[in-house]
Image (cartoon, rainbow, N blue to C red; front, side, top):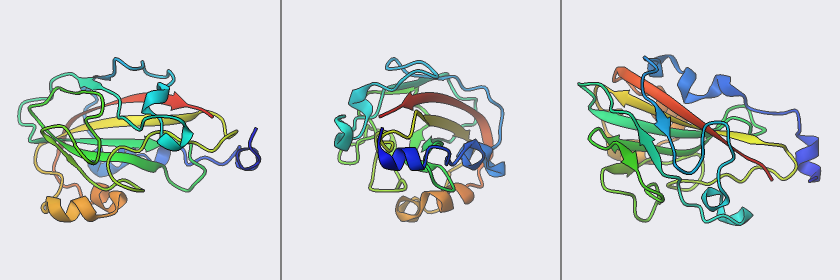
Length: 188
């Protein structure tokens, strides 16, 4: 067990800081989000982990049920709720065309996002950041949250792409018509 992981064993951000719990992102939980790579509560496969822990840093494939009529845009937020910090770390934040019903493996790669995907800046780097929890800290939960918005997430998408993810989430003013989530785990 890693020394740092052991020292921080009981420190975790927790679910209260998730985008899911922001008042402006509340909505009907009618979207069903799934992945052919893992089921909810199961381990995220190694290929989707960070390169520094032996993964390939490729985003997992995601599917979801059709959003309601009037959906202008989808907002995807991936957060690690077990990071030993005050708030969850954003591993990916993306705006997705409402016409899409799935993302293939690697669709959230910074250098070549899938058609219909606009990547915003996560907590570190750009694009999808694979799981890489502190060794010995125990299992971490990664929550893939999808929000169907009745309007654009940001008035200025170019500015949103450079902004801190917490500022982008706090600034969402479009109504949330539906939402859903999928949680996977990863441990070192």
